[in-house]
Image (cartoon, rainbow, N blue to C red; front, side, top):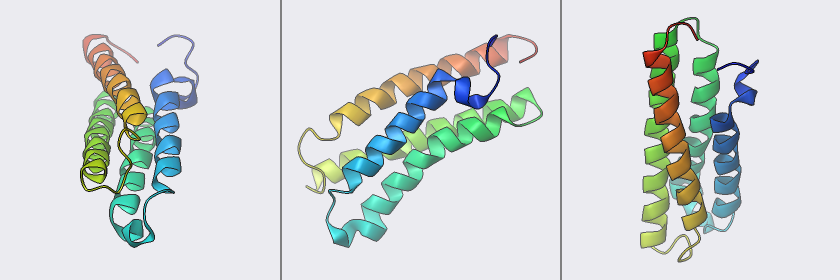
Length: 124
């Protein structure tokens, strides 16, 4: 990962931050009675993605980094599930979640590639 001085230089972290911001924007439209339900859960999952990428980057071992990237993958799938449910029950408007889902797919591929690179190459 030459040229990477910080987790903020990682494109996957930048994209995850975009998804978190988009999730906050989307959930502002959710009904008030969902504040402690799908709104809170979606936001927590979305924030967890870049947070775990950053936390893993700051860990001392490559294995710890990989573990945090895997947690980020899990949070990504959790967010996707919350969004799909929100659309299914009418909390999110039809089609409103699609851009975030598309970004999520890209982030999922990037996380998988980063994990593979870390696992297959010595050093960081």
